Length: 226
Image (cartoon, rainbow, N blue to C red):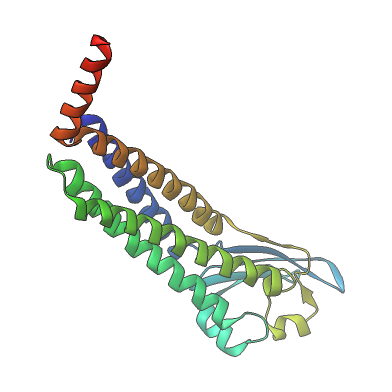
């Protein structure tokens, strides 16, 4: 395998490595949804709510200072099933987890392939499978959370208790940077797949059968004689 082909494969390792970092950051941050909070009966009361996949925070100020409350998203879904869909949340978490696993496998396979000088078809297949599985898993997480936001969280991210105290977030919620990390991951994996297609094409050219090369040489010789 030529240096050019191995370099392309190594680029996919870097891509998968970055994607793993992006997914870890997305899982551990609470900026999947960000929302400002207001009160119907007060212009001075302000608040802010951040929700991640597993944790979040709520900061509400009724005029006596900001009070911060930590939010456990799984518990929030259990106690407020009308505000968030459990299945859409689960689809996002499972999709993100599968994407993390697939990208890790893709990174390991890329290292093995780029370090080897021999043509190993099994490794190439594993690279394609891992990267395709990763982009599909990313798309599942993306679609599930986008649906969660459009159907539920766009209108409200507050508990019924907060709503009963005249707080609202209608029209004040937006998708946060944690969600956009998933979109960036999709773009990187697509680039990885393009690199793998080019690398596979170059490798196939480098390992053309000897008989085919001889046939080409004879054909060229006949053309020259003609």
